[in-house]
Length: 151
Image (cartoon, rainbow, N blue to C red):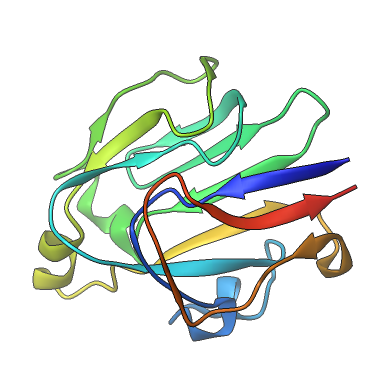
């Protein structure tokens, strides 16, 4: 079954290898793609329908009913901010719909503090061959299809 993965943020789609963190760039947590966000304060949205299984101010995982889990990481090293500048709109364990706001944040403020605001979107426990549409070089709005997970 093909599962569309939506972009959590608006911006320019880039290859996961462009993420300035080897954990993501080398696909240690799984294959995916990244979005270089455009604009200021905005809500990062759910990439799929499912349950919020992990929720931190700077990162979240939504798992679908069939067990596919998608990680969204808002910026690199943003964990060091200890939640400052991030606003949670949901709670862990909540059922969400694709496109629903999960976390409010400001990519420009993240960049101003010296962190990369890039947003990796990763298919956890996926093999790269089941993800399609991982090409960069396009612009997306939050909620646009980012890639598909074929299983």
